[in-house]
Image (cartoon, rainbow, N blue to C red; front, top):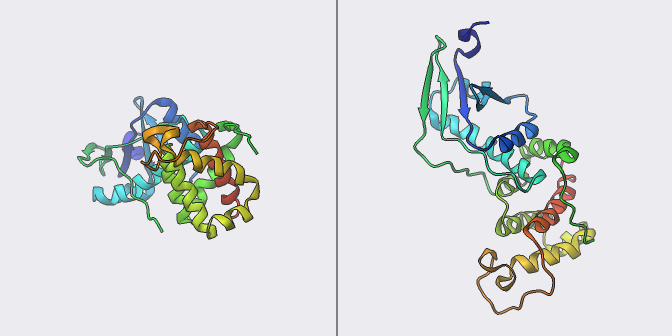
Amino acid sequence: MNQENIFKNRVFIKLEGEIEDINDLKRTLTSKEWEIVEMENIHYLTSQLIDNLVDKTEIKKLSWPFLALLNGGASIANHLHKQVTTNSYIRYDEQGLKNIVISLEPFEFRLPLKTNNYEIPSNDKNQSLVETWVEKAQRHDNIKDILFFFKEVSWINLYKIYEIIRDDVGDEVQLFKDFPNHKSNIKKFTNIANNRNAIGEKARHGSKKNAAPSYKLSIEEAHSIVRNLFEEWANTKE
């Protein structure tokens, strides 16, 4: 098959990032509508959904949020995942000729906002779960928002994830009624996340009035605590 037949009227979103992080996305991606391909040692995100779009704003509107979901899913499974970005795409015309389009705008996503076991899960063991979360995000805005915040692991983003889950069920009292096994660890997480004396400038609050808790919690442990709550909560969504 010649190049014209393969690339005629196709759009390829160029991916920017380390190869291990792009591979994270490949493992997360199960959508039949999107795929990641490699051409001349460069990786691209592509889909027939964007092939017929002419306006680059419309291409971004479809591709960038989906890439955010992939990054979020990858970060849930692997807290060391670094965000894969994009700032350009390639379009092949009706003759199969390549045209490079550069976006001058910054890469930024906007999605609609409506026990003491701290095991960090491995990618392989949880891959089917990650696929499920990304698929559910297409139907549930709260899951979509959570994947958005998971794409960059920080104390503040983890707290936002906790708040989304809490508000979804009603309030903190209801949260611990619905998910009682998480109460102890979530309390530890929120106490640390809010305390500047515990984690410095990374804390949600600026006040130093409250002493740091007697225990310590790493960002990796916090990620695992919030992720475990998210997993059980997400299982309640169809």
